[in-house]
Length: 266
Image 1 (tube, rainbow, N blue to C red):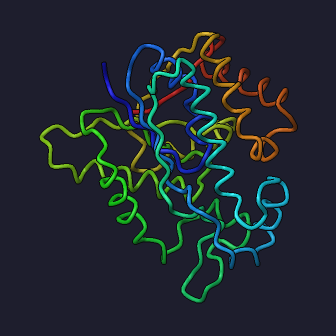
Image 2: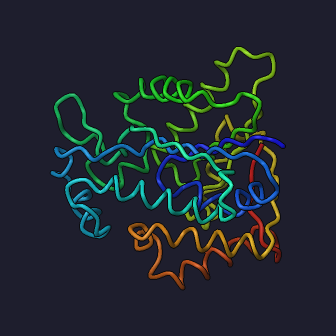
């Protein structure tokens, strides 16, 4: 059986974007690794940001450090996906803090306002690409695998960093055959077609071709159930669980032109 490595910027991106295909891979006996990069603890000094204060209030987790609660949600989500309980999914959390917590040289949040996280990566963060790639290498992941990286639909700085770091890691491998890379559309940003078009318009992505992964109804149902495990995050994008389920199903049908699917680019 084959091995598949999904790199998730945050504690929900892989499940939201690729949950259905992961269900089917595990169900068919394949090995899956999910690595969340920005899963580290909150930095207290970042609480000066009104955006951080708003997030912590809405998430209803530990207001001083919600990250352990979010990591627990992620483990619960992938336990739901790996419902057979045969450890088909290996989950790893790297301890890099989310962009809303990262501080500049003067001790001030780099991305102080919400809009800043959907802009360009700050120059001061350029070394993060190498640091993340080094942390990935220390995980000892198998090199004979297919690697999945964010396409960067939505233009989130953390997604851009994970894509760059993942590509850097793959290129640094000394094996004769480097793992193939596929890029996943980040849901729910990809609900807006212009965000996918924008991501594909960059020089690095213009040559990519689409690959549809058809989902059966059982896999789609498990994906929806897994997303409900992210209790703190539902309100970020949805009114409630029912709206989430309806939108996830509707988007899957749009991607598959009437049949549920998730879309990759390679």
